[in-house]
Image (tube, rainbow, N blue to C red):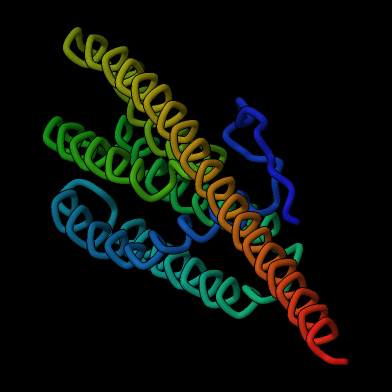
Length: 241
């Protein structure tokens, strides 16, 4: 009979039950299909900031973005290939987190460059894109909170620091607002991760209960069949001289 795990989900957003971890990883790699959108966004952003950013930097940045997107899709392919193997869920989750970190670092590199070559319009455009993409990441990465942090922190913090170090009162005011937005995203992501863990836990428990009920029903039916077989045999013996 399958054992039931009724423990509270971990505060780190990572479950201890291997069955729940497998479900977390499955949800993660479903969202990887949206990774090519990162490349499309990179092309659009590069076109918007082309007048002020060095062309060589942007070409290299797009190339690295394409490389990271390809690697993340390759990791998804490897995950699907290793699905039947046991004990690979944690490794697949770590690989996903590394891919998310690489993607976040690439986008964050634009924030590091903003105080050097960016125009005021570039600040607003990059910040808007960062806000939109980080919010969208909540739906695809909240199942595994460490991966969400790996993506959000290097993505959001550089634009915030760029606002803070850039001269001008307007920039200095926007920097803390971006940091506040990052804090809200992280808190929301943590709550979403906990909620997803609880949902997955209930799913596992319900499956275990269904399996237990099915086994109990089979055992009861076997006992009943054996009992009626015994009665039939006794009845035959009694009727036979």
